[in-house]
Amino acid sequence: MASLTSVVLPVPTHSTYMPYLLKYNISPVEGGVILSIWEPAVKNEVRVKPFLYMIRYRLPSEAEAMKLLSEYLATYKTKAQIPQEI
Image (tube, rainbow, N blue to C red; front, side, top):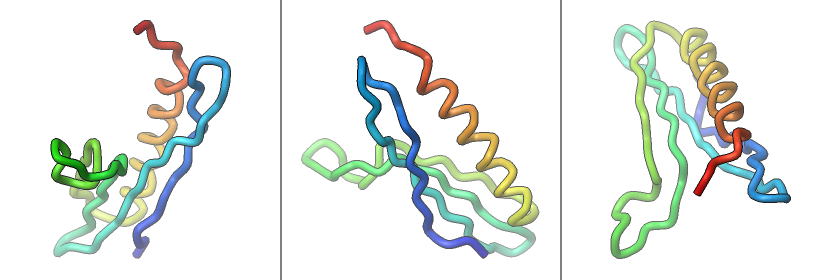
């Protein structure tokens, strides 16, 4: 089973690239696994959890979790490279 892992994605910010960190974990549960993906962030007076967001998927196998993770990262990386109007 996979353990806590970090994925660093290069994300363009104006004219430079800055590393962008996502973390994931695959945990065994009865009948399959749970894939958790989150963007870490420092807790403060407003943010009471150490992440900006977290998503969880219940899947039948680690192979399915790795497939979904790969698709998620490919989509996330593509969207992160699209210039955003502020």
